[in-house]
Image 1 (tube, rainbow, N blue to C red):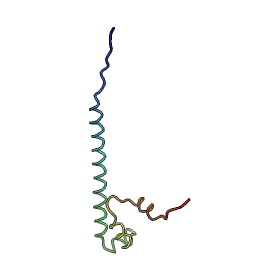
Image 2 (image 1 turned 90 degrees about the vertical axis):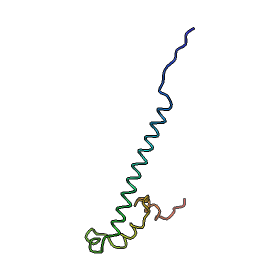
Image 3 (image 1 turned 90 degrees about the horizontal axis):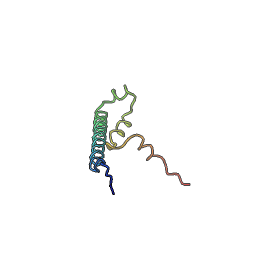
Length: 86
């Protein structure tokens, strides 16, 4: 009686690949967050004349600069909407 064996890629390979994907995703998200944080700091440093040039009020600039780095405009809109009850 003969038995056949197949050699498959070890499970460790898929774990390493998943780990690399997770680290890559984390690095990308970190870059987005840092860029967002810097942009909000830059916005808060603009004077009223420069804000007027780009069409942003001081109130809008302060509101944007006060957001946490992980918060997007899309998330703010959702949070501002009242809850709808069925």
